[in-house]
Length: 289
Image (cartoon, rainbow, N blue to C red):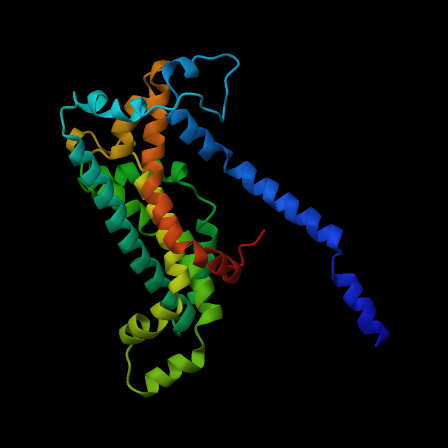
């Protein structure tokens, strides 16, 4: 009994300790949203407040919508309608996100729940591939795109993201913890094939994982810009053309922040839909602070 009391005291923080950690986490959370607050407040500042020195970062004395109303005139001289850029961004983000979830989940199912020979070695290769970033792969990808004549097509946006190893890693780790082998064995006894098991049993059970991938993939692809593989103006995305507004100097700082706020809206909506599942997925995948 005494040992139990001592153990309880050892692992339970005091009221002061709980208050300290609560204030610390709250302060860190507020600090992380400061850039968001700065973008929103700056997008409503008139030009004279943008020129103030020292600047007022988070306050607006005379809020205005002029920075937003100026965007159509700034984009009116484009050779391609703005609707084309919007379509390119929406198409690339939606299609890539869907295909990425399918590819990552299928690969994870094979590595986690089948008897494929060498699957452990393959998974080690996947983990080592996490060390490589997009910069190191840019030149080989460009050579492949050139040889296969994919330059100036949607494929240069979509294909590089499909084999993302982070998606396979997250899905595989989550399947290991959340999909019982007995359930899959019972389905096989009942005559279900791999595709039926994957679609009707595994995917509903790993919903938090693929919602998390939806958040990551959509966020990355919504902000993607052509990097030496897209030369046709009709194939460029919305972030590219709106970045031209950002390069207009201090006089367009307010409009630049308005552009930033508008570009943040779709990823924020996706986050609000999937955020309740993100921490669960990260905990199961072993990605913790």
